[in-house]
Amino acid sequence: MFNIKIENFEGPLDLLLYFIKRDKIDIYDIPITQITNEYISVIDEAKKLDVSIAGEFLFMASMLLRIKTQMLLPRQINDESLDIEDPRIDLVAQLLEYKKYKSIANKLKNLHFENKGSFFRNSSKVVYDQSPNASDFLNEVTLYDISKIFKDAVNNAPTQDSFEIYRETVSLKDQQDFILQQFNNDKILSLKNLVKKLETKLKIIVTFLALLEMIKRSEIICSQKENFEDIEIKLIIAEA
Image (tube, rainbow, N blue to C red; front, side, top):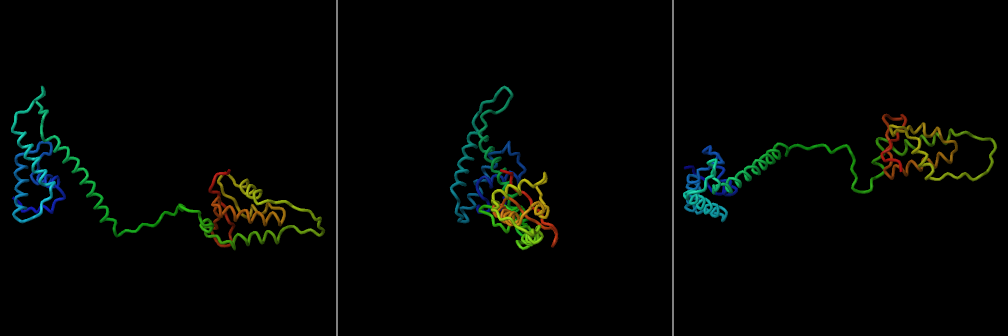
């Protein structure tokens, strides 16, 4: 008999599984007398060592004694010579369930030790729990980069020697719709190509404001592969 301390086992089922594994017992055909005797011996040894025994261990001891007594009584056998009143059935079911969860717990414990020194990089995909910051959608692009293109467009807009004064109506909503209409099937738009389609300085200015508003509302992302290159506008929402 091994020297066993009760506190080494997480519960009575853990102790029973130890006996089964140690003696290579078939869990479906437990020699109840042998298991019961060893189980009670462990509890008696613990008492001698003045070890506090949890009530669940004592409850299991009484259950094993009851099963042992039932095993001594004659039981009903069916036509296939199978014992249909085997008192060990409930105990086997508990052991199998406990064994399954113990195995899962061990796997999780091993994963913890294997990965406790590892640190994983966060996903590059940005997920927002709150209203996003417009700067998150300017991928390697500054407002200076965008404003510089629009400033060049304003400076290079056609000049007129004579002017006819009239009020030009260009709304922010109209230019937002205009921007959306310019996207191709890949949902990518060149900022320089967009600017080329604007005929007046007022439209250039309002379109610039519309672009900033769409970035703020997380409808588009602006990105630039290299300094001084064209800026790509990517649509990230479906058109309304």
